Every structure is written in C-alpha cells, then in structure tokens.
Length: 291
Length: 274
Image (cartoon, rainbow over all chains, first blue to last red; front, side, top):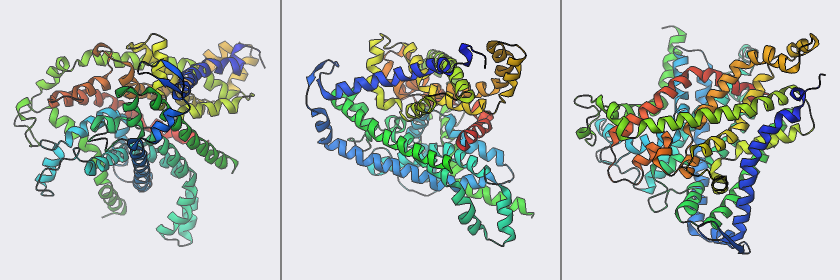
C-alpha cells in the first residue's frame, strides 16, 4: 500500500474526532464540576458541597412531576408512533395508485422545523380564534370552544399527539427499509401454502422486522426524551409547570431560575440515563450483527 | 372495479385521518397568512378577501430578511465544517481496518445520542469561554461538531458502496493517493456528499435549543428563534404575519425535502441494514 497521509486512517479521522470530542468532553467535564460545587448564578464555583445539588434536585416536587411526565411523554409517543407506523409502512411498501404522493405527504412533517410546527399548532389550538375549534364547530363535533393549551388535562395529550405526528416519518422510513429487505419469495411460498394475510404478517413480517422495530424503539426513546421545542413553543411547560418534562425543567432551572448547580446535576443524571439507552442500543445492534 | 383500484381506495381511506392531521398545520399556516389583519381573530376559516400583502408586510415586521440571512449563513458554514472533517473520517472508516476503529464508531454513536439540550449548560460555558456568546459563529461551530456523527455515518455507508478496486487500480497505474482521490473517488462520491450536505443543512436550519441559548440580540437570531420571539411572552401576537413568515420559511425546505426523501429512505436503509 502506498504510504501517504491520505492512506493513514488516524490522520483522516483526527479532525472529526477532535471537533466532536471538544464539543462533548469539555462541556461534560464542566457539567460534572458544576454539579458537585456550590455555584452562584454567574457560574462561579464556591467549593465542593457534598452532592447537595443532586439532593436538591431529588427533593424538588417539580422534578418528580417532570420525571413522571417524561416517562408518559416518551412512552406515549414511542408506542403511539409504533402503532401508527407499522401499518403505514406496510401500506406504503405495497403498490397502489398515488403511492409516491402518499409517501411525500407522510414524510412532510420531517422537513418542517419542530419550532415552526409547534408555533403553528399553538395558533391552531387557540381557544377563541383557533382553526381547530372553529373547524370542529363547523363539523358539529363540539358546541363550545375548548381551551386546549390552557389546561394540563388537554395540553399534555395534544402535545403528545404532535410528538407522534412528527416522529412518524423517521420511524416509517426505518420500517420501509426493513420491509424492502424481506425477500418476496417468502410471501409467495406462504401464499402457495395457503397462509392467510394475518398469518403471513405474524409468521414472516413481524419476526423479520424485529431488529428494525427494536432499533426504532430505542432511537425514538432517545430522540423523544430529548425533545424540547414542541413543549417549549406551545406552553413553555405551563400552566403551572403541569406540562414540564425533564428537558424543559432543566432549561428553566438553568436559564430562568439561575440554579446552575442543580441544572448541572440534572444534566449529569440525564446523561447517565442516555448512556444506558445507548448501551442498550449498541447491544441490540451487536446482537443483530452476530446473527 | 379492478383489484388494484379497490386496494388503492382502501389504502387511501385508511391513511386519510393521518393525512388530514399532517396537512392541517399547512392549511392553518396558509389560510392565516392570507387573512386581513381585522379577520385574523375571527373564528372563520376563509378570509373574505385574501390579503396577499401580508407576505410583503411580514418581511419588515418580523425582521425576516436578517434572520433568513443568519440561518443561511449558519447552515451553510456549519455544513461545510461538518463535511470538511467528516469526508476524510468516513473515507477512513469505509476503506481501512485499524486499531481503535470500533472505539471511534462507538464514540460517534454516543455523540449522536446526546442531544445538545443535555449539554446545554456546559456548551454555554464553552461558548462564553471562547468569547463567542451572541455571535452566530458560535452556532456554526456547535452545529458543525454535533453534525459530525450523522455525516460520518451517512457518508460511510455510501462510500462503502463505491468499489475499492477503482482507486487501487489508479495507484498501481502510478497515481498518488491524492490524485486517485480527486480523479477517481470524489467524482463517484459526489451524489452522496450532496445528499448528506443537504440533510446537514436542514438539521442546522431547524435547530432551536442552542440558538435560543447562545443568541441574545435580534440581529443574530436565526429564523426559528426570530419567529419564536414573535409569539413567546407577548400579549398581542400578529398571527397573520407570523404564519406568513413560517409559511415562507417552511415551503422551500419542504419542496427540497419532498424531492430528496427517496434518497434518504435509501441511505437509511443502507445504514440500518449494514
């Protein structure tokens, strides 16, 4: 092999590695330090304080509420997306008139920034002049305006619905990739044997799709867990913190209340949680590779 | 009625609730954008007479041009930065076996999993330390770095589909690695780099948390932050201008995306199956 910087892999990966490492390791080190120190709102460290920041986070009732809602938020969106995306991907994988149009429409939310999506929904859900209320009234489905975002009992489910809507494109894409990898002759053989559609779905499609289902679940868990703009742009966690999840709570702690120590402690805990997800993902991917 | 037509009707019927939900925000954007200001708060769907002027007025009222320029600047430069470091890395990952390759792959995976929000306080200190607070270049740097994982992953899966023999043949013919790269490899890799660049561009174009944290003055706002600033914490929101702005900011990206999405499906499929 010719010797040249262009054939030395270490030279080639170094710039990318250094750039990515700098943006991750330096902030992580900072977060670790701040989380263990007493810190004022200008970020000056005032000496170690025996994990007091961590204790403060854990004993804050708002934290426990946000933690519980994060579980509902993540679980609700991941499961909801899965239930919609599996049949949608199966349909989009089949030949029918207008399939390419249907594909483009279903992928469309992916192209729009989450912030813009959330702002448009915030306006559409407006209690007095929102187009959702007037549309539902015109259809005769409701006879009184609903204050969608002013109450936690409607705001949070609606936010989860928006979350599902914007998660469908990515998930469906992964499933389409998975479905296209299943050889057609398997289905033909099953048909010759007289299997029903439901049987072929259960015995062929589902087992062969399993790695793709697993990966989409883990990846979506990570993305949804981290998702900030939908809640921030619709309610900013309100009314009365009733739609806060961990990321919005973290942002408020750090940048609104100036509690940098607690916010850093929360960041470190969230990092640990994400690392656990990542290890789960790697082990799922590895298991698939070894097959 | 033939079988395919029947199936198509059934499929469209099944997809229709989802399609209505997806298209609803676009309808809201468009209809509100063309409502005259005195009808915006009226609970009617269609305006009496469309006010196309909103699209022109919006430009000045929402500081659109300036934010658009910032968004273009940030997205282009951060994409160039990400590609400049990712192309060699992806080339190395797809062409060579070396010690530490697995570690590098896992490192990229972890950085892909970490959303900026988890690191935001540390990133904020980093940007302050670099003296780049309220400077769009800080965003270029952070977006570029966060995009490395995605761009390496996409490029690597495409690069692996380009036969290695072609370059080796050029080496044997006496071409230097640099010449082989420029004459043989890069032309073949151009489509992959273009698609990756466009997705990296869209990522940067849409990012919210980092821009919200690092940018403090209106002159440095990117589009999502500018539009967010028009609706957040205000008593009166000029919804017709805001919706005109979101519409103009959304449609070009949506068109490019609609055109590219089949490449994405293919790219993700290659990446996921490998």
